Length: 138
View (cartoon, rainbow, N blue to C red):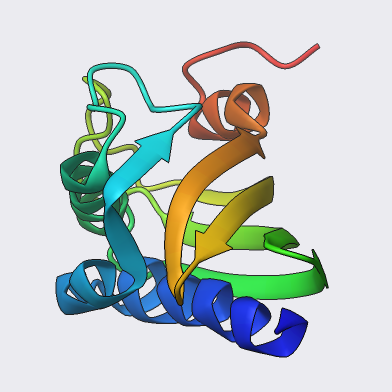
């Protein structure tokens, strides 16, 4: 089961966030999905996952994602990754800067019946804002 659960998360990352394929969200995220760390102003449900994909894909249309580690045990899967992209569209009220960012992220999901039902995540938002030049570096 662990390998199948890993594949579900990998596919969501690669298809939805990596390519902007919202149909992957419909297939891989349960209707009862709960987001435990939603971006500001984004609902903590399946519709919010689609909004998050659209927000980041429009802000960073050339975004690539490098998955560095995937670990699974039981119904939980954890992933460590780096998202990279050029800020070419608005992001949470920030006008495009043309700067390239590398965002380190960690995500944990719970999977039931082949779909993601819960998500917890940590992204280096401060580092992203510093790379965009909207927050001074230390």
